[in-house]
Length: 121
Image (cartoon, rainbow, N blue to C red; front, top):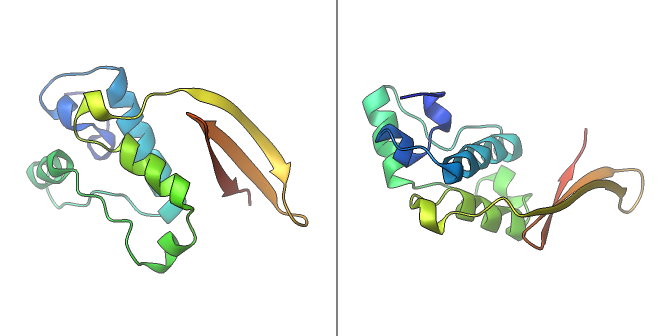
């Protein structure tokens, strides 16, 4: 096994690694950046691997998720698919910073034709 367990894709726990594994890890990082918490929590490696293998990710009614766009949540659910063949692919079209309504800078990450906006602090 290699990598940081909290960021490992389900298949990595079975000693299988491929490019879709990186998309899973990027999805975990995106979840962390958007919510301030990890998508999978456990007290032991065995519990963590079980949580990751089940792949149940909550983006429910918590206050933080009400502020996240539908397209960002959709992308996250595609990046955190437990089956590598169903996982989102890294087709990044562009990434740029723009101003929208006032003085707020936004990062627009265009993934597979979907623009995900994130505020820059």
